[in-house]
Length: 315
Image 1 (cartoon, rainbow, N blue to C red):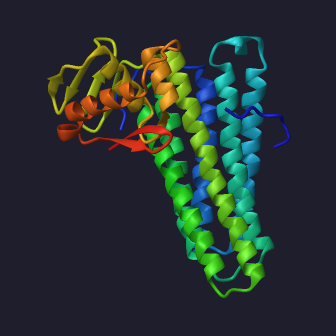
Image 2 (cartoon, rainbow, N blue to C red; image 1 turned 30 degrees about the horizontal axis):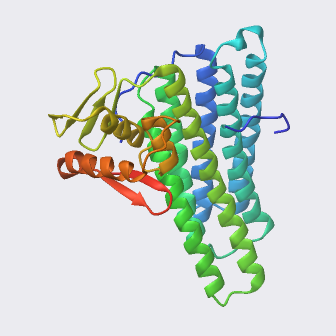
Image 3 (cartoon, helix red, strand yellow; image 1 turned 120 degrees about the horizontal axis):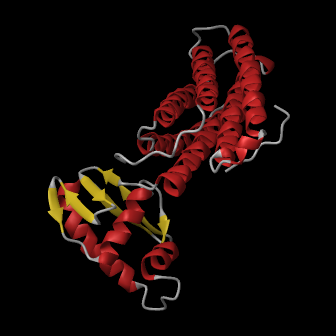
């Protein structure tokens, strides 16, 4: 759409104070259109629906999504929209609309390029787009009801990582094949378009996480069998209390908050030891070693060192 739009497993946390019900109803409607469009596109990629017919259905959903997004932007332009969540709602709406636009663009290329034989990589990427769309829908529903949102955000991160891998594999397979160069270019474009839709889904996950951290404040976080009670400053592993030092607790808190994502060494040092810390960086490695011994054996998690960057907590 033409309007200028801004861009920007975990257990129970307190969700942010809800926006007016009409805003959430509109967001849910937009998310529902994304699910329907993603499923229709996958039907075309699996040859269960004619590509021209699928594109027309998706275009109608995209037009509906544009109208819903305009309604949301108009509501947020009113004086009451100066509420703290207004900017986050604008960003969410823009990213949701981008996901729908990306699905429509991929469907359009199936028709414009007159594709006949569907490339397996595109079919696999389409399936990830469907999963991401469903997870988005669940996240918006949870936000609307004031329920837990972090698990859905984490799933969206994992799906985007999977789409990255599938795109690399698809491009490698395309250039290793003996297909006509035009076919290679067509499918490379379509696969990149599908992967870009999962990127926008991850952008939405980042917005949701920021809203929860800034306005909701986590009460409890968990990854695997590791549970963090932030308010009480307590940690349990597989139901057993585990004593952590202050630095170990802060490290674990930061890693769990960014589960499955790399947290840079510089950020870990600054946020746990303070911006004025100028000590040996091996101090961080030592504390990570102690933390691993306390949470990895029974916690169902791994703290992975990413060479030259930092650390990542995986299930």
